[in-house]
Length: 288
Ligand code: BEZ
Ligand code: FE
Image 1 (tube, protein in one colour):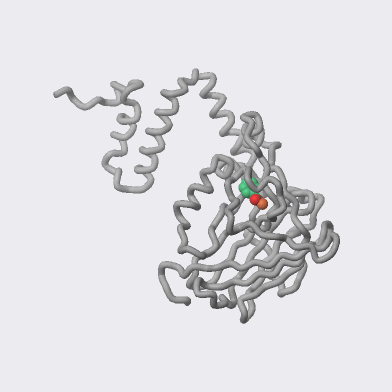
Image 2 (tube, rainbow, N blue to C red; image 1 turned 30 degrees about the vertical axis):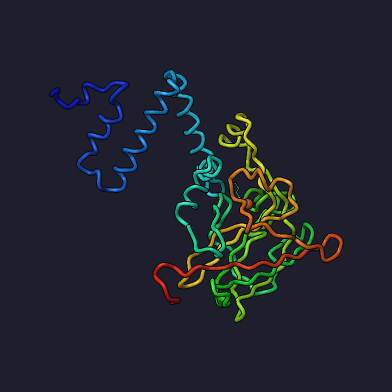
């Protein structure tokens, strides 16, 4: 029997095995496990495409640019994960819900954790630009019973398809963001403006790369929500405007049949939307 290869035997054939040997004694831990698997796939990719050292340096330069494009208002790594379908796949794997529960979708790069708490009926449009939209929603459990005291956090793009944190000089801080609490009937309502669909940012390394590859960058018009209630699984989701013609080609794979809704005209240029979020109890069980 020939002796096990050592690092001195590193070759095209055994590179991933040689790497794995170095982590062998820690293989039960999650980080060494995922690192070993990731390196195996990476080495396979390199063997398949056989980049030259210059081409590989271009890959590293791209990843460096992705890092440099990030700051407290912009998350280019999240955008990369979203556009590659990786975020949607992680959601699919982790948020299998009972039938009837509102599906989870990706949170996206424009979320801000510090949105203001607002009373029911308040407007989240701080600049009043756009066609008025009244949103009402009900939060219920799988039996149709109201979930009271849930927090419903929302954020959305403006009528031109931009989030407040993309345009700090043009939109008031926290424009089109707010957190509401459901009443005794599990209901909320608030005022806003009808969001426009948009293209994900293509002025950074990720958008530029994907555009070059001919990848569609459109996102159909939507409202974002995150709904939390003790004893229930948090829902992070979107509601999409049925009239948007790009429902089928969402750049980040967020559209699902259950999340498409009619924004109804109340009169010309004024809209309303009403929908129901259905929460599944968390694994721990009873409501706290
Ligand atoms: C968003 O809907 O805010 C979004 C999600 C993923 C990538 C870009 C934008
Ligand atoms: Fe969005």
